[in-house]
Length: 207
Ligand code: CDP
Image 1 (tube, rainbow, N blue to C red):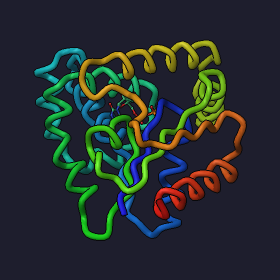
Image 2: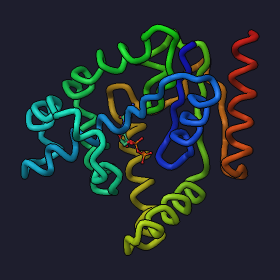
Image 3: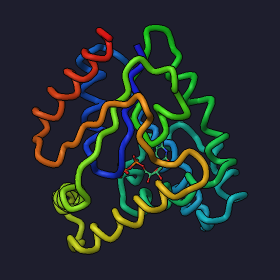
Image 4: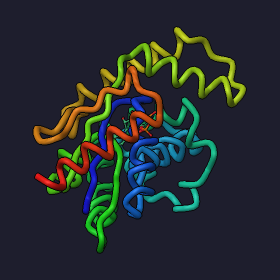
């Protein structure tokens, strides 16, 4: 079974994808990490994420980078959102994600274009969302726990910019697949969101 989980920043898609993977005993790929790795590789080489050829060259990053704690930073998220709009970068990362999705037994993948581009054939698709305010508050709390000095307004501004860039790009924009179930987590805690997600996947499986 392939499960596709898409949605905007801090919507809870990563947590839900992880919980679904545990529940069904499937391997999980957080595809945002691939774009974050490209973004960080460009920044560390002193390059500009907006430069397509520099970003494309960074796609050959070493797999060890995928476990680097720096990937979780806001700078990496911002750089990821910029490099991910380059068609050559998306093309370079495509096969890797498709191979993961099509492995024997299936997989859970989360990102922006899993249900639309990477695995349109997925058995279950969820589009996880939440209001910008709720998402900004979650990301703000997360960042505060890691000891980073940021303001709520700054985080909200960053989330809005990223939403616009991710939804407005010409290639593989963030959008709900026609056959994806919508899951709004604005008023749900983690437990309730995960229980709802499992319920939606079960409905799809039976359909
Ligand atoms: O959850 P959050 O948005 O903070 O981070 P992420 O899921 O790691 O994604 C970081 C950035 O990578 C997003 O803003 C997207 O621009 C990009 N991305 C993408 O374009 N396609 C994907 N399948 C996953 C991430």
